[in-house]
Amino acid sequence: MLCRIASVSRSGYYRWLKASLKEDKDLKSYLLIKEIFDKSKSKAGWRTVKMELLDRDIVMNHKKIERLKKKYGMITKIRKINPYRAINKKTAEHRTFENILNRNFKQDVPFKVFLTDITYLPYNGRMAYLSAVKDMASKEIIAWNLSNHLEMDIVMDTLKKMRDNKAIPSLEDILFHSDQGFHYTNPQYICSVKEMGMVQSMSRKGNCIDNAPMESFFGHFKDDADYEDCRTFEEVKTLVDEQMKYYNNERHQWGIQKMTPVEYRNHLLLSI
Image 1 (cartoon, one colour):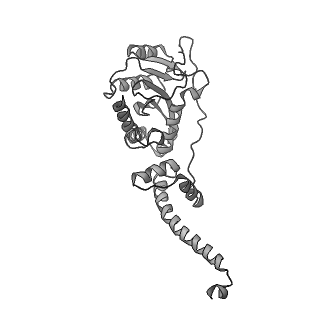
Image 2: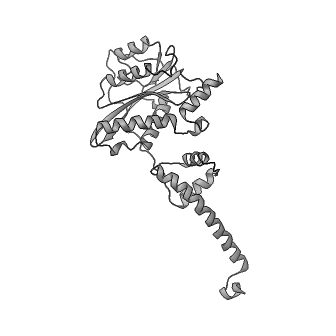
Image 3: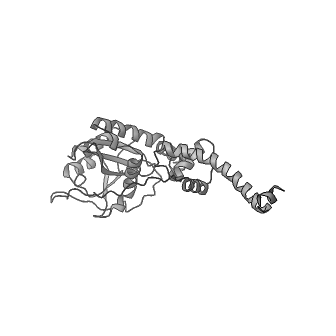
């Protein structure tokens, strides 16, 4: 009778009712996703959302997460491509090395293959530079150093911090891969790496993909860290240290069985 009065069909009414019930379910899921999305400052993709939900014992299909993000306008911020790569050319006295790694990024044993690179962090009209070393197997950042200039001590201090890392059993025969930047071809750096017993490997000239995992890490780091809001170098340094500890110990990653880098490192060591 009500359908006749409202001039609607019975099938049309039940379609509307079904859609309304679905909308109620969507709203509950939306609120969960929105909480995680806002916490990440609009930087969380569906993988991050899904892993955060799993931490709360909530299982949600990734297609549903993508659908609700699109439905409610939750657009993930995408980092911009770095337009500044090599800032200096190597001099005649500098030496390059063979690309031994050769994009063999699939590693299962920690402390066997390390990658390193430098990136820039603009803040308050100034520039800071971050040097970092990444374990290819566990994805852990095992050493990092922040500087307000690009002199050789940015990489030399990174080497010292790597050497002082007590979690690394030995640096002997570790494959140490970098690009052909002037820091890594410098005789002083080459000598220090050799004295530590490591074997140098270098990307081919102009092939940033040869060091892609390091580029990827810096990209995610810049997504997560609000360094541009810092006013002093000391603030940037504090932020970097906090972000590195968060990345190593708290940031779960889809590609390493949803573990943190430190958890995955320990997992791999137990499997050996």
